Image 1 (cartoon, helix red, strand yellow):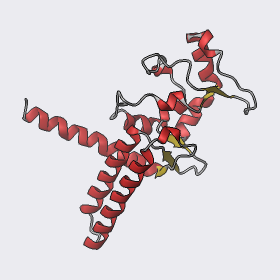
Image 2 (cartoon, one colour):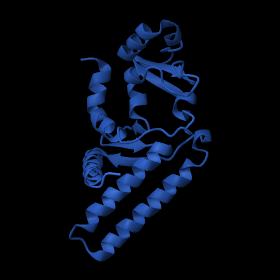
Image 3 (spheres, helix red, strand yellow):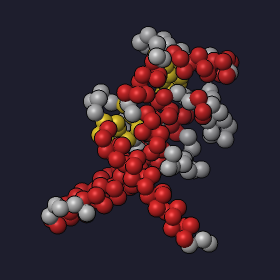
Length: 202
C-alpha cells in the first residue's frame, strides 16, 4: 500500500472529502494556502506530479526531511496565474485536507482559519445546536451550548482577520466521530433542500 493511501485512511480523508464537497473557495480567496508557507508531499505523490510536469516538479525537494516526505516552498509551482490548482485531481494529501490539518492527537483534526473553514464552523455549530435542541437535556444546557457555539464562531471569525499574515493560527479541534456526523448532516441537509426545490420550482 502506498504511504499516502495508508495515511489517508488513518486521517479519515474520505470523510473530509465528503465534507469539503459541500463548499467552494470564494473567488476573493487569493489561494493563500497555496502561496504561503510550505506544502508537503509523499513520495508516491511526487512521482505522479513529476509525470504530469517534470519541470514544475523540480521545485519539490526532500532536503532535511524524513524519508519519503518531500516539500515545496510556496507559491506552489502548480498554481495557475488565476490562482487555481492545475493538478487539482492529483493534488497532494495535505492540499486535499485543507483547511483541515492533521495533529498528533490521533483522535481529531484541526480546522485552520480560512473562508471555507468559517463556513464549516458555522455549519458545525448549526448541527451541534440542532442536535441538542432536540435532545432531552435541560433548557439551561441547551442555552449554554448555543451561547458557547456562538462564541466559538465569533472567535474563529476574529482569527480570520489577516489570517494569511499570522505566523501561528489558532485551530479548532474536531474529533473524528463528530467529523463523520457533520458529513452526514451536510448530506441530509442537501437532500432536504433538493426536495424543497423540487416541490417549489422557480
